[in-house]
Image 1 (cartoon, rainbow, N blue to C red):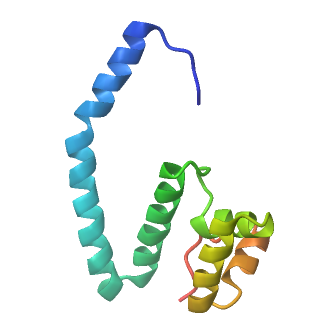
Image 2 (image 1 turned 60 degrees about the vertical axis):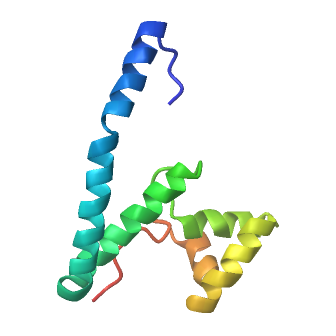
Length: 115
């Protein structure tokens, strides 16, 4: 999404991005509260919220939209990158074969688990 903007358009974009900071902070609070509530009341909704946070975090860390951190770590692990190996080792401790599954999952694990 590297579109060439005129200097004035660029300034307007920066101003707009700065102005939405309070909305983003409020959204974070709403997301956290809804996630905590959903853990006890609507587990599938809690998974959706967690997966959305996973996706947004991955994008913030220069990953691709729609890609889970697990999938990205699994690809790094397969390529022999140290950070991928370390993260996959941790993930596989919590959920056996997590990274191997993330590598082969067409949806990159961005779906709500059944139940």
